Amino acid sequence: MSAHQDAVDALVDLGVRNRWYPIASSWMIRDRPVPLMRLGERIVVWRNENGEVHVLADRCPHRGAQLSKGWNLGDRLACWYHGLEVDGSGTVLAMPAIGDCPLVGTQAVKPYPAFEHMGGIFAYFGDELHPEPVPFEYPEELDSPEWSAILCTSHWRCNYRYAIDNVMDPMHGAYLHAESHSMGRGDKDARMRVRDTEHGLIFEKINQRGVNFDWVEFADTGAHWMRLSIPYQGNAGPGGAFGIVGFVTPIDRENCRVFFWRTRKVEGWERAVWRFMYKHKLETLHWDVLEQDRIVLEGMPNDAWDHEFLYQHDTGLARIRRSIEEEAERQAAALSAGEPAAAAE
Image (cartoon, rainbow, N blue to C red; front, side):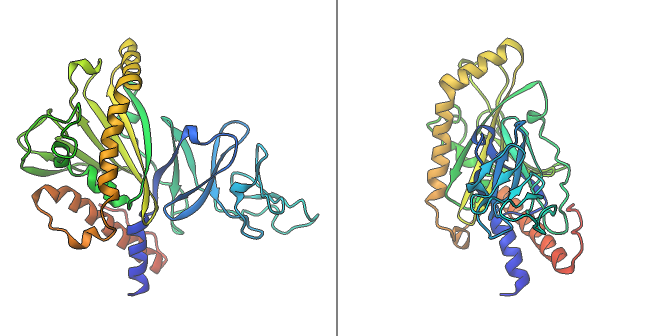
């Protein structure tokens, strides 16, 4: 296998670059630095004395020890091994063990641009040709005061593409989730179609709408995200349909972390009622649905793709697979040529 194909496969397996990815829930990052693996890269996430989030490569430039095992000094991290101090930009501020160190004042640790939004922490993973972050356009549900959103996240022991395939497959809701309080209705067969959008596509049932998990949208707006809507019965509280905005972040080739913002268009006192009902009644039911997805995907072999028989219901996920493979090919070719990749159409 060629070096180029190896590079393409790594991007497909571990996530294409030059995108924003959610890396953790806000509550996961407190006073101590936290080590994480994301997109096959070891990172450390920490907050400064003002509560601002920073993300760095989890490697001390002195001897390679993990910065995440060190101390948070407020405006910097100090390595546990020999005390080297580095700030949120990756610049070495001090090497206390010696008085004159050439590392001091240099940006010796890779920083990852990061921000916090709606209870989640996002980081930008750029390649060597794109170190500066691209703009990120939020889906409406995460950007409009008309919507309320609650984040849930989970570690799934499968490649991230299995999780994307699962969301891009509306038909499984009528079977895998048939006992769910919100997805037990509707036809168990359907004709499907793809509709292109400005930033991606919608994969939907042709003859059924507003009954079950009847459509899903995939978009690329500086990050890859998916959106779907599940109709609610009246006893599920005020507001419109129950929506999900989902992101999937690779950890390594065999693990990923899913981030699902549960959304509802609801304002005022009705928002407070819905959030109360969700936390005290509905959340457990929705975790049951996620567990059903997790159990099925974790039980699939790593090479399930090599033994598939896809049919018309799988058109949406096949399109997304192809788009990821094409983006990986573009990025690998650009890196090989030393030129920025052209924007994907």
